[in-house]
Length: 288
Length: 314
Image (cartoon, rainbow over all chains, first blue to last red; front, side, top):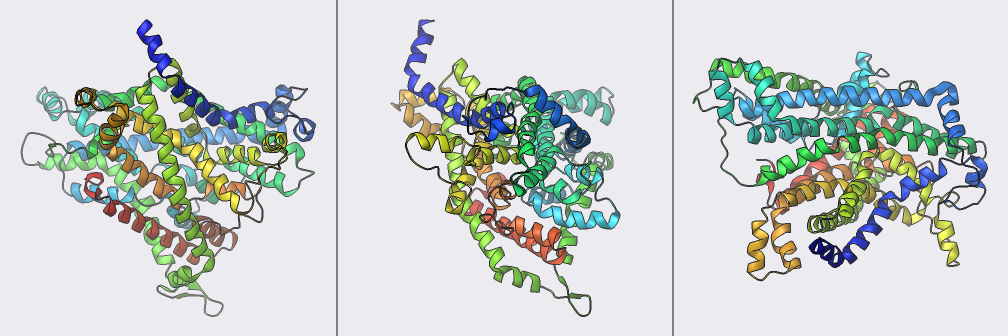
């Protein structure tokens, strides 16, 4: 006990420094939390911008947020959820299979395919948006949910991660033993390899779901129907409208502030609740 | 996350997936069965669009005679186009300032968190990582409010000292405004990767260092940092790729910083404007492709300079 408090004392300046850093990283969150409670007069009335105004009205603002324009905001949140789940799960399934295949089978064309994929890690994702848009518009796929989900399935980095993990964490001997016991290839994969790869699977799933949820350029380019927008594009549009007409847009500003706050809650919750899993994935990699 | 840095550590790796010697026909089949679905998506959504963009970029819609084949004219036009050039110059300058800053902040925090074990340190780690969970668009919206002179606290803070708040959305200061946003957004993520790499180091090495008389700083500088170089390099490459394609933050702040951020502020924004506002897909594709080429060259030049190319792409 004394040893521990001595350490804490010695680290005091560092802890203070950390405190300042935490404040810096939390300031924007604090600002939206405080200002999400204000109405237009509270926002523009010239009060303290970092503290609550006299009237704290989350309920009223939330009602306005979710009823504005026929409840379009709720739709955006649902769309974002759909894109993140479909893109995240799809990309993870493809990455896990391909990573395992690259790591554990020696097949014709393996080396070539793998190097091409590694090269693709360097292809800027946004450089693909415009050509994919043109291709999809020829196929009549633009302005549909597929236009956002299909490109999210491509995750060469996930394949790379799974390859490294499968190579190191799934010993060939175990697979051979399973085969010797008469398990087929698929059974070996599902019952032996997959459980061993679980930490990496969770990490890849989380990374690809976050990437889909955060995506902006792709849906911005692909979608024109605002009922299909994810919340990132929707809030961007609202912000453009509010900035364009300074006086008439004042009511929209409070919606945008609260909308930004509400939109970050799902991922923050996901990160906190899944903490044990992705941290497990990180340390599992680190301990070896 | 350390498993990706492990990749770079030299080790005797067994390339043969099984100990059964030569591949059998069945092995070819199973391999392709597992890799096949990804390979299809890869072909359809990466190779095909790239090929198509290359094809499109070789044509131009002319006033007379419809769309004509112009070979590399669009590229020649792009590289002499002041809009494209100023955009490229901006993202290069921005990379040179923002990337070292982000990585220095991330490295410093990771080293502190690796050395200090307390409840507060664990809490800080999570809080500093938090911005990664925030969409870049929302991050830009939030910082836009904080910078704003009508909503933000800057007016108050500078008012206490009798000054006027700087306009981080206008003039030359937008550069620093954006630098701050990307540092806030990404430093925590990079910190987590570096922290995981640091945690993977065998503590016996520190003990050995201390016996040889190395202090706290020397352990950090001579043992920790060299051992996490592969992770540092990986982060550098990814941030370079991301920063050269800078789009979301300036696109969002455009509304608030009218006049400072034009539609050609970064090459990606310019390509977007050409393709979607002006329906000029040929030129838009050429700009996308030219930018992709620049990213490729920069990354390779960087990897060549650091002579770590092999360890990353092994």
